[in-house]
Length: 327
Ligand code: BTN
Image (cartoon, rainbow, N blue to C red; front, top):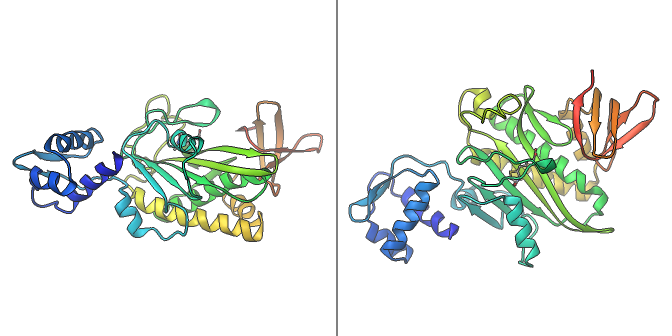
């Protein structure tokens, strides 16, 4: 279904200046008039502006900012990431969809990318939700099947943060920070978050689903988020290409994973450390559900845990949790 909507939108984008008759569109797509009308309605519901009717012809009234697979594929320079691709106008959660695919035993190649224009139940860390309005953000999940032991799994989410950080910086030139473990901040406000889900046994990762949400072109955020979150557009004052950021991110993420598999964790650890103000010498309080550690950060270990030196001089190593500045 979503693939058909992509085809219809792509056809309309090839004919931006003249109206294409509904009859021709229906014929080209091999569907009945009533199906075409239904699909046009679905695209309109996804905020695509289409003028016209079945018999006079349809025309887009502006170029929609949709991450069409046809556009993405023509510019994709990765070997694996994004080569298998699902694109939704709306889905409950890209992570949820990925998990369902994997659980139902479908063939899901390493690097499969699931993209959504909007999510109705976007999931955040710690059981929170992720605000996912259409045309504004990047909402994506990537399925990875790395051949390393599960202990290294956190490094993949750190690598995702590093790649996203670099892509955002390159495309927007904004000053971005990585808040441990993997949020992106501009100023003190959050612009991106990462949610990883894993299925593994003790010595093997079956798969990892790494979900990332990036606030790109939101003109405003809901009141309850506005004091903690922002978008790239809100900070820079102008919109940014979601597609450019996505393509740059995918390339960098793949390169980092490849370097990890060939050279070990050092690249990820050092890149993360270079770009996070939380890595070294920061006074923090971290709660991971079991314990709260307070102290000064002393970098990451090679599994991606944050080392915190407490008042007694002991080093605590934490893999996940909530971090706060400790006054
Ligand atoms: C966080 O709480 O900071 C993590 C947010 C992760 C949100 C992304 S959006 C795409 C993917 N699908 C989801 O349901 N969640 C992640």
